[in-house]
Picture 1 (cartoon, rainbow, N blue to C red):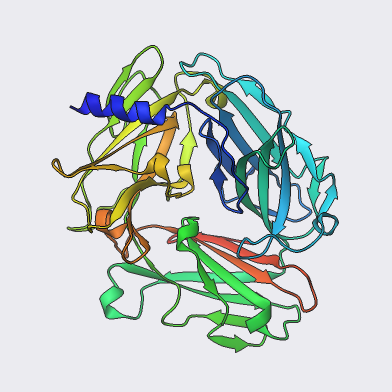
Picture 2: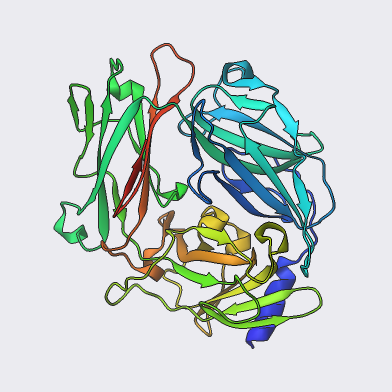
Length: 425
């Protein structure tokens, strides 16, 4: 029965790749099914948050694979955005030095893999494209120098550091939430002139770099000399959720973490994970995770980027549907926590099981199950994963400044912290 499900799901996931008529959106998104494993991070640390300092030696790395192989004529550009990811109403000359776009010329072909692909990579800033102001940016990749043929849109950040952010993770004040939620309090310390913090300063708090969790702060609880305090009892409360589930496909010669079975045919490699159970009851179980991250690794070869195999991963969740109107998804940073058909689970009401088959490159992956409640229009992980204050999560705080008379918002402060450490700038 399980093999039949795998074959059916593999057929669905292997439909012919085709260009569709789409337009760019300012979100993390891939527009073609043949584009896989989009990575975007600060080059100083693999899979770090894609934030770099303005006018520094730091680089943003964007890479991806094209499963159609060969060589394509891919181009890219970047655009400045507002804090809520709307395109800024400014000219490219306001935020760019150099050219407006460029062709991707850094690519390599896969080797020793069942499924052939081409690996592409971009490094920013570069000699052609150089951002000159801080803020939110969207990187757009498109085919044949035609922006009407979108391939990838990816968010990244350039920090023009002007304020310091000090933050802490603490228990909520409401007694009923203390075992399930985590509260973020933070201060913005500044020396520049801020006439009206309510209009000029905006702070966005995010959990595990998941845009679905973003909370916008526009009103500090207290205004002190050279300091804005955000500690209102009703804001910046997050469900602690649970430690992420994970699996390990670094090698396909043996069955590593959470892998039940591996089998091959002439065209594909299939990996069946052990069946998952809900974790919304019982005590918190501590385990090490990467806060939703993933890392491409291939211990069977020498090059992670071009010798790692693509495998069809079968996820199985033994659970009933939490509500009558909704869908379940497998999410993590490997798909930017996106809720789409590719990572949606199929529900077998008779067996009370959810299934999904997702094509992923060899490596280490964190994942969790999310439920989209269509009645309340909310995305919830608690029905499958539970929620605990003890869970270790990372939190990102982005601070934006809209100078009076300016035509754009600047990212002036940023910190990335966990329950244990903080990496402020």
